[in-house]
Image (cartoon, rainbow, N blue to C red; front, side, top):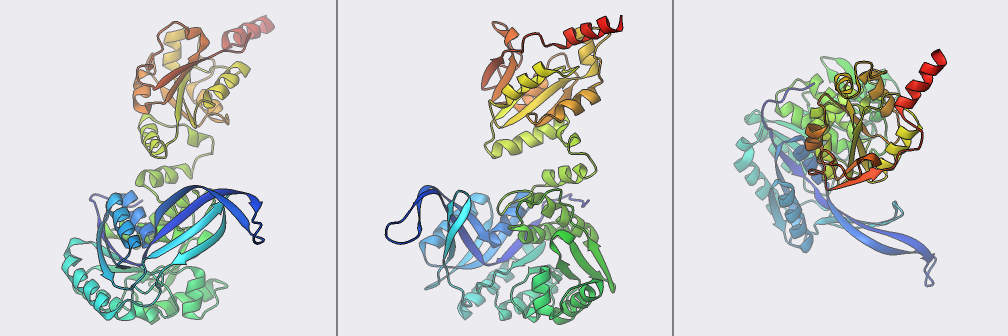
Length: 475
């Protein structure tokens, strides 16, 4: 794993845009033409293009600057406002007559019905090129590394690319490029490029079919653009690196793939982040693969945090059930992330010694009060203090594993205290759930949770009764 002992400063140059979504549902066909009529329910906007690289860098913990060219229009003002809100330092050059990129998608039942674009795709003017380069010269000493996010919308011209890379080399600054088009000579002298397999085949004119042709494509790209390293991203197969005439492939480590949208932006951001902290190229590739493994498990263009990457890496050697068992420290970080996603968190606790129908029914009802159920589980020592030296029957590790396997339980945290008050303080749940036998009694943690709910037990079901029944059978 990479080391990070400072906060990186990273400069992104590229094509900025707004991704605009109109969300609705379709119940009828238009009487005017054979087309769907979408009843719009909500409207959202997010940064797109180079903006997704910026969002990933910010979520990883970088300070980020961005240089780009926009139009003198309302979309540019909206874009600037979004960048300011996210915390990026924006240096935007306005060019009269240019349309700032905005891609609008009409969505019905989470499926895209149509997309319409409002943008200019021609190269920026000579005057805008000059202003970008002047601004770059002014800013270069503030940043550790430069990332080109080229979406082919005309901001990164061949001449501008050449001048920036040459100037960056004078200051020993690496330039990493997510390229576009067929002519990679326009990125001549970059540290490396991050084309995917299809892009690399087009630029190198080599059909990548096996290890031999993969190496040939890497060599051609390195020669064509005079790169320090040559890299090709291979989707689910990982990332290929040409180093010292040897091809090294770092395999993808995704547990589940839901959506590959924006994965290339995440890889660029992760590589830039790792290298800006002076990590070696192999460690940077491993870090980028882990970051990509996280985001492809999410829906839509997604971002990734260091905590998610650390947690994801540790999860790769665990079973899916063990992943639900968390420490105090881990659950605190998870809760912060969940709350940012506006998830309603439910908390309950107990010994759950010999699992029975009553337990499962209780937990199922508890989960119905919110989005995420966190279960505080009494440790073995805690159970002994509460129920006597002969309890628990099952160890804390066994009990944690069993309740973690239940569909309704999202996370289990073992606590050693007599009450879960300290754990509840860390979780800060929206809903605290206890059994109906607490009616009229004080519920520990009710002063922390937003609301407390009591749940009826299933008649005749308890661990004590199960133990008594076993004793009778043994006799």
